[in-house]
Every structure is written in structure tokens, then in C-alpha cells.
Image 1 (cartoon, rainbow, N blue to C red):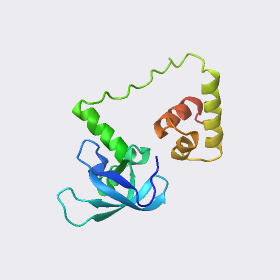
Image 2: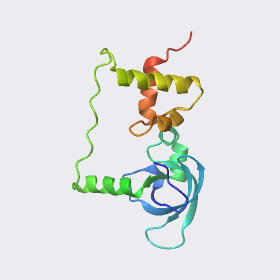
Image 3: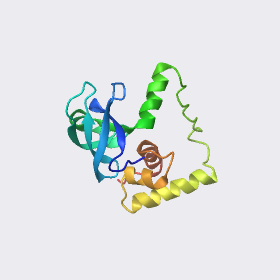
Image 4: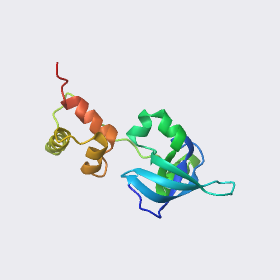
Length: 155
């Protein structure tokens, strides 16, 4: 989901996807998912540089209101357009998968994923890095939920 320098993206004020986005151009990549963007005002005028912009779905931006308020959030043009089409009623929002009850045993694939996540966690990786390493369909929230279920606090 990371963009490259020169890519066009949508920049949301306060990382609020319910607001109208501005067009942004990525001018630097600080770290994966954290960009420097020149945003172009919808009303015209000079672009403004915004540093330390996190993706709108980042767990870090969800936890830190100051990041949202000061830097806003970015999204891909495709995702921004999908959000707009859903809002207009032209698309049906994606349906969340139904998870089995917690007391059911995990199937082999889920068990393997859980083992991978625990291995990465024990290696000291952050939740965001683990989600990135797990690939498509894995977000920080999903990884956090797996870790909460499997990692027991020490007394």
C-alpha cells in the first residue's frame, strides 16, 4: 500500500475520510507508510508541504490525535475514489468476514499464521511491521487481536 516518490495521492485534513480530500504528491518517504506530501488546495493557490503524514488507516494515527490534527492522513487515489463511490451509493461497501467463535479451534492455516505472528513478535517487530510482513489482508488491528489472544501477560 506504500506509495513512491512522485505518486499522486489523496490527502485528508485531520485524516478524516469523511472530509473532501485534496490532491497530494509524494515528495519523500520518511519510513514505510509515513510520507512527506505537497498538498494542493481545492480552491487553488500554492501547494503546501505536509511532513510526517501517516496512512488514514494507520493504527498510530488512530491512537494519536495530535498526528491527525497536525499532519492529516494520506490514502491512495483508488481507495479515495472507492470511498466516494460507496458514499454516493454507486458501490456496496465490502462486507467484513465473519469470524468463528473464539472457542472453536483454529484451522491449520490460521494456526500457521498465528505461529508466524508470534515469531515476528518475539523477534521484536512492531505490530505495523508484522502486518506488513504478513501481507495482504493483514492490518495492525488484526495482528493486535491475534497477539492479545495468544500472548499472556507475565505476572
